[in-house]
Amino acid sequence: MSSATSGVSKRASSEPIPPAKRELNALANPADGRSMPETIAALFLGNHEALTGFTDAEAEQLVDLLERLIENLDQIASAQSSAQL
Image (cartoon, rainbow, N blue to C red; front, side, top):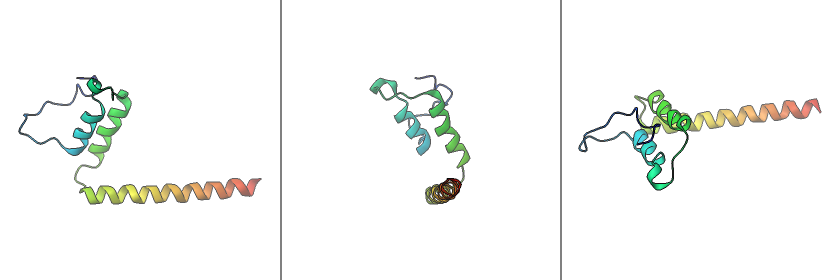
């Protein structure tokens, strides 16, 4: 077990693993050469915790809205940058 996942409690084999932790375990598995830095692993866990109570559809909608917001802010910054030239 990598140090990135050492704090994650072990579950009984019959107990389902939440999707975010399953994704984290799949991405942070050094046995298959796909290990990643601890900070990225912590980010995945933080995202999972922040989205507790959200349905998959709600989490997807939030990501879509945030992406649109970032695009709008990029356009504003680009327009302001062009105006200053």
